[in-house]
Length: 311
Length: 174
Image (cartoon, rainbow over all chains, first blue to last red; front, side):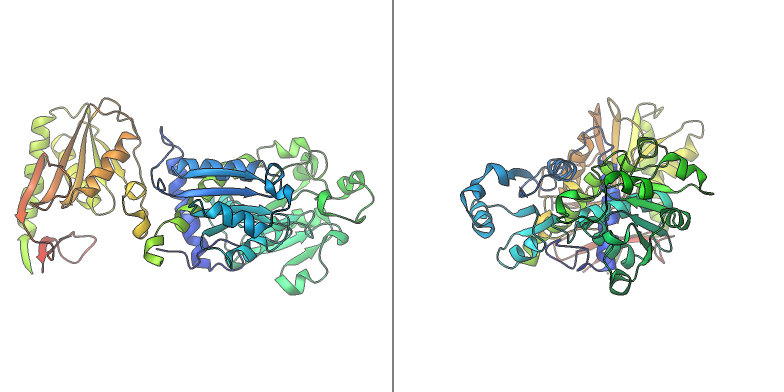
């Protein structure tokens, strides 16, 4: 029982058996989280640093909780309040932290590939908590876990990923993962937010009409418009985007079936998702957050455990 | 290879242990039974079956405990996880932990830690099918023993159960 990798840099490098192992392990951790004492002593000799070079609420709290529930020691690092502002490089920063005997690094960075670069230079295990527009593997794992919990399996299920596909690391990780687990994937959104060759490169269906996408799918994973990553005008206004691609309760009620609504957060209410849709009983957005802790516990446990043997 | 308990002996031993448990926990009212995953479960299933045949009117509280997260050798390699299922409170209850083979005592140490995270039991007892005495690495003693044997480190005790294995008996393997 072991992952085929030493780091979790992305879903791209995982085997289907790795994904299966993480999801199955998370099931057991979810049980731990229902206990009166929601904590196990498993990683009590492991120190983990959370390196966040980019803002985060959910992912950061989720990782920190997962680490604490596993009894690991944690250090938090925020780039804006550190010597990075004095000009220290990424590698120097991390090497300095590691010289204080840290075993694992959880990192988020605005540059795609930052954790991959780091993994070639440091001995500690790295968990990617989001790198630029590349990958966000634990989000894809918790999305898959939530779908599996709701629908029983992933194989043959129809998942539509809707919104800003171009700038979304969640979309890319989700596509890799769902593809490996045998689900059917469709991306939907305005043509300017969908990469041109995505159909050929990743083997997904492309749809520009929201209604058609919703009619096709079992699950709609709705993404946020990442204005902070867009440095050109890709649609005329948020209001116009919302009129064409915003999902509300009426659109959902008009479908001839009940689909599941997911969102990785943070939601821009009234843009991609209206409040009545986000808070409806079809939405599993808060379950996703809950499952996130179990998934991250599973990832940390599988990467930290068995280390002495591997070395 | 040596047979420690044959199928017939095993059945008698399970019956005897069940009777001993009933002797000490007459009504089973404040008693809960917890089998240790994965191998202890086959044994505890049989104990519970025997008990429920003897006391058909009583609903026995029976749970399963996986101790993987409490092991002291996580960094030396990962073990397959099993499901923990304790659908009742153990607060102020008499808990009987059930496992198949007691050897170094490390599994029971982990089980005690795990158990205390579910509440504060009034008392914890230990019931094992085979006690490999004189090989303990921790000060742990069983309360109910199917059979105590003397063995050396190079030997292994394997319990075979019908339904899971071809045969049903306990063997000492060199």
